[in-house]
Length: 558
Image (cartoon, rainbow, N blue to C red; front, side, top):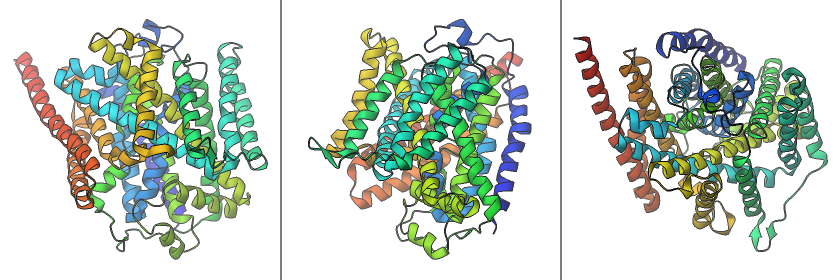
């Protein structure tokens, strides 16, 4: 099949989702009100609470939630064939992710921009809040520790990406000053930022920077991880307008340009999908398609991490409540478009079926490598861009998004510790610096405590990210659903995705439980049991809370 057909169907479906389905959700279900005073205005402090232009905020939200996950997940899941991955990304984006992301923003904005974890205590109960906080902490720990490894490995493997990755931070700092201090118009600043960023990308291959294999007894990979966490700690304490917003915004523009380049190359080259539509000859050891597809592809279809960003940073910057539709739902559409690009690059970016099978010789293979190599093949043959430059472009895209997610992730982890301080009355934990040190310390403890001197400990628990992340999405939808029931509004738009996620998450946890037991991996077996118990408790809490709320609503109508 031609890749163009999937491109048109995929983008067309997501466009219909935004222009039709999201309008229904915004107007009839969430009933977004442009007159509602958002927390960004109510608590404006110039640091965390900052009313923000919706386009800039969309850039922050989108690039924070995107990261490398919408590339990695789909580019691994195509091992089952391109059709299952394609259908889940498109349908998930329209009916799951957009509703979840916009709903998380709405729920937080209506409750003084509190995180969805803290909000659970009021909406569902204290038991659910405690459970939610544990799950949130695990997800953030995984994301921060693993994305540090992803970025460090990309910079070790692609030395041409070092200058663009770190140069983008300087570009963002300048953009922040131009927008908020010099008050330059957004279009002018956008053009300047994009030109500077792509100038760095094209400069990268000419100025490669290679970290030595060993520095003071530590590997080059470990040194990069320490540098990344040092940077992220500083970034998490700076006012959002100084670095976080402009960095995310310019990266959002960079992504869409990169997607246009890749999509344009697909249109000009018209490559064939060399991978099978449904792969009946998967490598030995590959788990079953159902339920593992729905946790392998998390970001790009639906992701609980999005709810953390939506209620952790985005809700504090929303200028008008009606912007939640554009920022939240369209942010999910942007991530769906990235996941679609990953599927096409990882299935149509190879010369033959044999080349594709060599890349996917075992489950878990492919990922960023398949995206970069497949995408570079398409861009080189479609647009004539040198393959090394095309590979640098896609590598920088992946690294920058992993970096922006790590920036936001560490800031969110700092918020979690501060919220714990408020909940349990621990004064010093409520302060920014100590909470940041705790966030960095726990990440480094996992990275180096479990991974040794290489610092790759986060990869050890990464197999549980998909299930834990989807459980978190279910919890977020639970909070939104209970709020809708209390307001006597239709709940099936959120309840149906919630039920589907809980069923698939529990099934995936049971599948992984057997796998970890057979492998003798008792550490992951223990963690899997913890998450499984949490999932079961969530399901019971969900049923009890919804039943109680519906009874209350029925009595009020009598």
